[in-house]
Amino acid sequence: MIKIPEYIQNLSPYKPGNKLITSKKQKNIIDFINLASNENPLGASPKAIEALMETTKFLSVYPDVGATELISNLSEILGKPEKNIIAGSGSDAIIGDIIKAFSDYGDDVLTAEETFIGYFVNILKLGRNLIKAPMKNHQYDLEAIINSITPKTRIIFLSNPNNPTGSMFFKDEFESFLKRVPKDILIIYDEAYSIYAGLHDGYPDGLEYDQENLIVVRTFSKSHGLAGIRIGFAFGPEELISTLYKVKLPFEPNSIAQKVAQAALSDYDFIFQTIKLNTISLERMTNLFDELKVNYIKPYANFVMILFENQESAGNFVDKCYDNGILVRHLPPFGVPNGVRISTGTHPQMDYSLNIFKKLLGKK
Image (cartoon, rainbow, N blue to C red; front, side, top):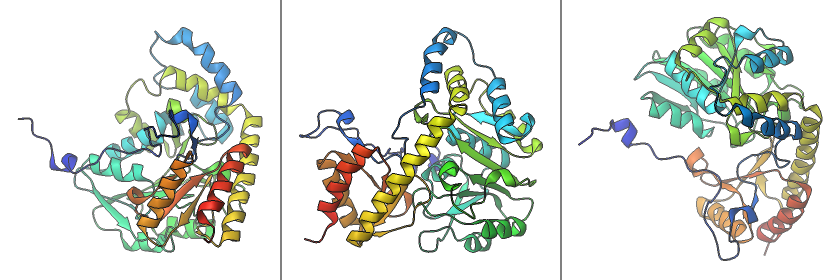
């Protein structure tokens, strides 16, 4: 019998936000309004789609190992040297590579209780000790993270704004935190939703920080609408980025992802329309929840987390939304069993969904 390590046996496969099953009312998942996965409701940028059509001629050719053109474009946009940037098959892949490169089996990797499940999976599958610091009112408590550091701590993961709660910590908190973390502990600052959060005063933009123990991770999955091709990037000190190149797969991200991401970077009008739609949709949702006196966390990304009295009530709401053709995300895997995350949608999607939410959440 093949021996499977105990830490692998204890893992559970990732369950996506979509319920990829049919119901009596909907025969195909496409019939649903998907507000479960924080995707871009506008889809992918027109420039990215056009580039996708042109990449078919490269399908038989191995990808550029260094993603040279993409890194060059990112360097110009970010104002960072090319040697300080790396691209990968989604931020998930980069997160996994960071854990491989900068920690060892049995080391402690620290994050928060109610945060991105991708940290939990990557930390545990690589045999590291997952340490979760408590949160305060569903927000990162950076003081609690400082207090959770042990002699075995090698990496700290921070998601800002945080997925799934939507909360955000601010510049003064972050800058104090950076000064207090020992320089031999690597800080990973995950900015998957930075384009949305950057609208708010006091947001600590990762581009503003150059520190020897800090790597900033970003993705093309959200505002750029490229979740389906899996591409992300990170930037930080040259020594750390060059170390990541030693552990990443040699031909990732793939050729299609590289070309499409380059095109998406230049589609500024699409980004503007994405931000505009998101701002309106968030306001419509929070206005309704205020009207209905629904408990929610102030959002800084492209979703709202609402809170119920208990897990059963949250699950019932998710099921009733499903029966009405709407997918939303119940959050027990993220550590919030009484929470439901609802992504923003197009205007027609919001029209329909808000009407259903009002019926389900209004006082009987």
